[in-house]
Length: 90
Image (tube, rainbow, N blue to C red; front, side):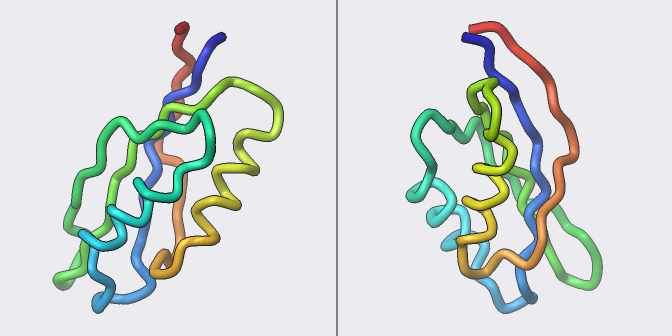
């Protein structure tokens, strides 16, 4: 089955959010068949950092909504946006 790789920018609710703890929370609550390929921290402005999370998800109907629901359910995430998307085989 083909998979989709997504780069998602995750912004914390505020500068007090512990990004290490947020990364652990993301990895610990993954929906079935979702994989995190990498997580990196990137400076935004004025000391604020975001996470760039690369996900691999199955190519199937409803997976985007499942990703949105998953990210929305995690405390500490202020907003998120898909930065890149690519289809892969296997």
